[in-house]
Length: 489
Image (cartoon, rainbow, N blue to C red; front, side):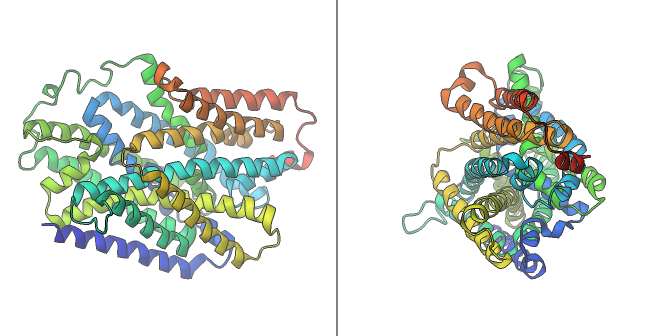
């Protein structure tokens, strides 16, 4: 029964590594090729790469699990994300693509900020890099937790050996394959694998709800309203604070380095096409994930099944309803969602360690070849930290993602928007916003205020960072130098 599934997954892993080897031959000779693919990504590749690296295992685990447990009211998170992504493509994408070239051909977000605000260059690069590495270690761990849960649920008792549980086997295998193609092929490998993974995710999220609803034992004949009161009511039990905390997930888009770096890499003039492709892909995938959660709950109730962890509903349905070869494809889609995000996060974190630590404090005159190798080593270091965090089996994918998403959204969101749109912004204001946004989110998480108030930590963090940037910039003298303002114009 499991052989076909294992064959499909093995073919998927081989394909990802093959893409990494192809990219290694194409664009890893210098740091611009390794970190941004030469700024020549096709719009479709950039669009699906941004989408796949954005959605992660949250799309096939966290969101369907939330819909499965609570009903349609959880769809507000997806709605907020869709609106936030659209505004991100319209406001941030074209400006960031142009300004990162104008300001010294910056290859990373910290480098762009340093070039944009030269009076606080070192402080901005160091603070940005610390925040990126810290939150990406947590964010990558969320993906590895998803990989561990996949193998634990789908292959219970088959894969663990030598004292290793199925969960930890899944964590190490997921990390190992991601490391293989990311370290070898760099940004181009990550983007091309993201494109393939995005296509796999799209097919899976269209196929799964249809089979659940209309296949044998499906729920098409069952009323979803009978599952539990208000299950299909998008406003059932929703408070204003709950609504605000759900839709403000969309604010996080403006500050996600692994997403907005795709805007820097797309070929010149390709942003409009990439936006249209990316938003169409995102809309279909979100609807599919919502369908998996709702139809999956109806299927389970109709057939008297027991699902202990709502976040595994996609895996449970894949095992129950499909031929093993198709099950392997569906599980590959879940791995695609997980691995596309982890690889992007590891690459951005390694670029910050290389460009914003190594070149600043170790070897300013490091050769291109040396910088690429340091980047590869940095990928490994961050991955090991993520594995250590993911070793806690009780970690929740949605919880880890929400913390990291809020941290990036509050720290970098207002900073990126205002640095691209407000000429009067100063380096002191940028640094104040960066530190304030990250600090407020961390305080909100560890103080327990989120649980007490029900307010998602991105809300106070985003507002505090925006006010800090405005306030400090307006009282800072002198204004930004003429060279900086002319480049902005």
